Image (cartoon, rainbow, N blue to C red; front, side, top):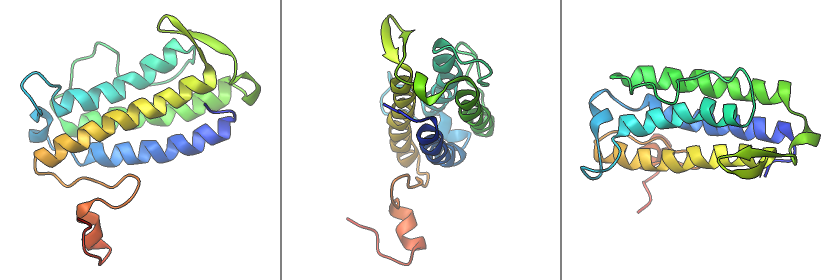
Length: 167
């Protein structure tokens, strides 16, 4: 749970950058990649990440968080998904900074039939994104795409660093 707005804003900037790297690594053809026929396609998963930002933050009471609507259809192009995500992600920090204070982060708000602390809600937003970003990188790997490192180098990035990839 976040106890300071600045801590969230700093974390969010890093997490959003990592997610945007993955989204910008998608191709239009890779949007159809699935693990199983019943599983979410990469495009649907990426769109869900973008859609969740305004939906969850709106449920939390924040105004002005931009992004696709919860029921907007998945775009056919990967660039459109990445751009929609970038707009949504960029708006979150500003909204939190202008509407919430450090002292309010412990306040509970109704979220999906439960009561969550505002600071906990921000933590769940970050974790939700990281969870789905991990799923997305698996689909990217299956589609033959390079996967960006988020918390350390990915296989391809070791070579760029002049080092052998780890087994």
